[in-house]
Image (cartoon, rainbow, N blue to C red; front, side, top):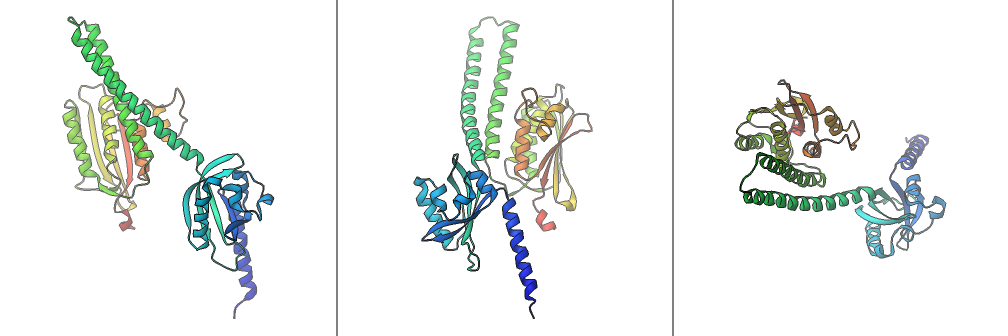
Length: 359
């Protein structure tokens, strides 16, 4: 025999929990019913009022589209309404009109499909305005700067070579000055490439691919042994190790090896790359150890996110940012320690590629 009071109490509790959840969610949410194909507002949460700037009492019973959809986007809104009325869930980036102007939202239209519910569905709006604006601005700045920097580097190096060739008697001061200009041009070129690599990372979706990091690291070490014959580069690797990553991992490893060599004033810089498996917990650690000067504590603090980026507190370049954002793209973590050699031990912690199978 059904305990009807208990069933009603459970239903009332569920409704209370639902209303509490909706009222505290920081996304703008509106419940609506369709009348003659138009979504009329039944209820909005506090976040909707805050984000869109319209009073709740003035919205209820009104057409949602008349209030927040720009005239030139009505066809899009009609199409989304038709899908919702047909019982389909909508998921799309849209532009909607607030009391302060247009903003960009991630829109989710969810039909209820239950005649016992007074409303026909709900729309959830997540404000993406600042994120999309900053992303677009970053892309534009990155592309303009990297193009201009690359052209400037070519002009500097080309004309410096011509200038030195035109001098019959080159003094030591001239040769020294030319070397400094060449070094600065090389740094600009490196900075430009790092900016290109960073753009490919920060504009990417999350990665769900698996690669074997061992042959990737072996190729990096082989390449750098040829590029820096004075350096001693060693590796301690298993036969194979699958990690959740993609080919961009190579640029992160290369950046760490480059830093370890070029920032080490020793005649024979030492670098040791190793991979360890933490066993059943599903994580792999890639270490790049060196015997060079320590990465400044201020720079490590900024990279970890423990300090704000300031004019005097920002890090010396983009290399470690490239590594950090690449690892975080894979759902991993970057950390710094002191190596057994007294230098840096930079650790990349990545998920094992077969960690799901271990659970």
